[in-house]
Length: 437
Image (cartoon, rainbow, N blue to C red):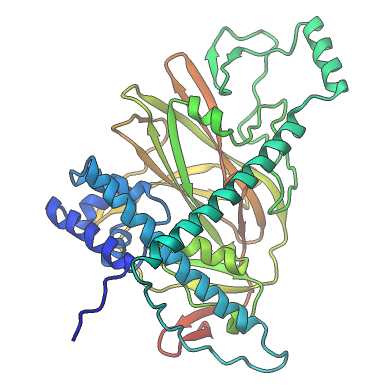
């Protein structure tokens, strides 16, 4: 009897497991350095989930001594596993779509689990990959051209803007206590006697609506997300993930569908595409993980973090679905709690836990560098609000300083209360969503 062929996901997971075994370190010890929970790292190494981004994979590999060709080979394995996951998600989304088109008034029957897609022969696989890459390249070029066209149209000054700018130059310009760098940061300079500082919570209450463009920067100093050229000139990098669950399982989503039309809960690593496929909204809280790392050995100081709420609405009357399968280990990053129901929310430092060892609450400032990254976990929570919000991170390095906007790829984060909403848990035995007890 022939041995079943190893899938792309299995090959990737086997390599991660080999690296972890060869390092001689526990899942908890490696997870602390990678910036994920121990349970999440275990799911990566066992093939249960594939990381959404390559960054944690590269960190794990370097911690385990990988370099050069080994890193290149590992990246190829991740790309193939990620494509494999995409195929499975497309198959699952198709099944969910068939359920939604059921005849009104009739209870749709659950489709049987889709059969595994047969593996193509080796000479067919490169052809398929080549076509996919070609399509992706054409699509990316079209999107880039559209983005550049929009950016040019929005940033090209009108005649009124040019007249106002000329008038300001004649009048001496606005009072500003610092000189801007091309990337939006500022160098320290003596403050003007007339200069006034805005309070951290004085953000304008601009209702943008979820999915619309966030508010532009205002004269009071409110920031917009930096462009790629601006980010490249900053002395540090950062990444965000707003689908972080408590201990890898504790989270709730609001979905405007009946339980028969909502697919089974995903693993935490697959939460973002699952939520996007059903139009889910974070319920009760949103866990945002921010990973910050310097670009050199020169320290960058993270001075403060502010919360900006841009819109408040009544929570939508959707069903609430709890992701309560596969709980893992304790969270390890720096923890911050944000009560979005307060008129002026602040990010409050919280005590954490690392594999049973308490982590005391530590307030700003923090220092980061290329060899000393920092992971912040901010949890925005609400009871009676459907809130749009984002964060501002103040930083300084030498004679430079600035503020960067932390949001969901240019859009504000969205968190909605779930009070008095129908609540459902998933039954692994029955294979369906059931009303919570």
